[in-house]
Length: 204
Image (cartoon, rainbow, N blue to C red; front, side, top):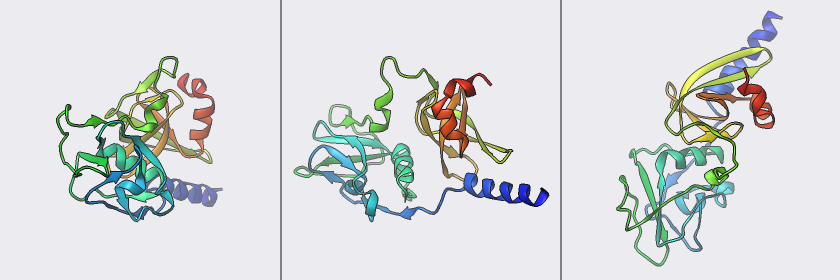
């Protein structure tokens, strides 16, 4: 039993502390899109099978994406963008106009700030928000009776039972989790249960 528990703990640590190896990608020098649907392929070189994954919609001549959220969305699609230049914003413009990548938000009258598709669930009647973007969140990983927990920073807001990307403040890796209560999230096998029955976890 000790050997089995040790193996489970090792597997949990491996899965929790670092996600599976992702495909490294490079930010395009001039991200553009043709139809208003901004995809990972529009933004990154080498996106491969994830090239058609949509991350935002452009209504006006340009759209600005939060670099942290973009990094998390890329990670969820199996891509690894290290953001070596430390950008805070990434601008994507329609292909007919001039384009640029920016490190600061552009004036509000020049661009439309992105509302990522992942946030479409936030509407009247949706699950009440329990985690706000940039909140410090305790993430629990449960497997085989072993519980691990780390603190991380929320990359987006989330309601009870909704998916949320958490940046591990120790390893700087993004953890895919599910909001289970105020300042609480669950990763690993327990995340599916938290998504299916969030009230059960919120009551703990």
